[in-house]
Length: 219
Image (cartoon, rainbow, N blue to C red; front, side, top):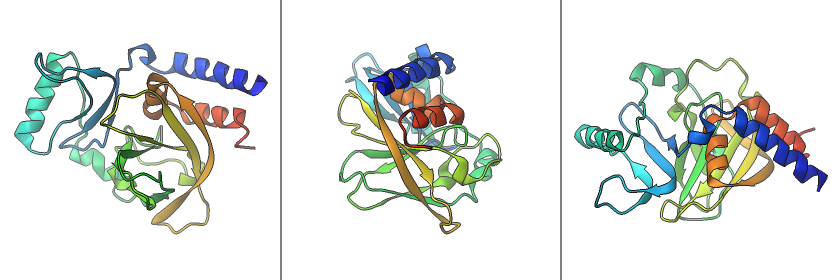
C-alpha cells in the first residue's frame, strides 16, 4: 500500500511538471521528414462527416501529407516534421531487440525520452521486435552512453479505443554487440491513456529513474 502511494505521488509530481501536460491530446510517433503517425487520447473526427479515429497517418505521398497537415490545422492541431539534416544525427544508432508482445496485431511502440523526440513503432508479432534507432528524431547527438537511458515500450491496438497503457521500463544490457542492443526488463506501470502518452512523449530520464526506483526495480 505504501509503495502504491509513493508511486501515485511521483506520478502526480511527474505529470504536473511536464510541459503542457494538461493539454496533451495525442502522441506523435514514427515521425520522419516526409510523414508521421498520431495516437489520439480520445477519438477525433478530423472532418465534419468523418468517423472518429484514435490513430491517424499523414500518408506517404507528398500531396497526401500536405492535405493531412491542412486537415489537422483545420482542427487546431499543428505538428512538426523534422528536417533531413536532423535525421542524420541518429543514422549511426544501432538496432534494439525487444521481447515479443506475443501478439500478431497492433503496434509495439518504443520510446527513449530525452534521446528521441518521438517514439517509434512496428507491427507487433510473436517473434522478437527489432527497432531501428536510426529512425529516432534527435535534438542533438547522444551525450550519454546508451546503457544509461531508461527505455519505455508498450503495445496498443489502433483499431480499438484507448482504455489504458501498460508501460514497460527497461535498460539496455551492457556488453551487447554495438549494432544489436538488447533490453533488460525492469518493471511495468499501468497508466491512463493521458498519463501513458505523456510519459512516452515528454518524461525526463530523472523522473523515469524515480518511478523505477519506487517500483523496486532499480537498486
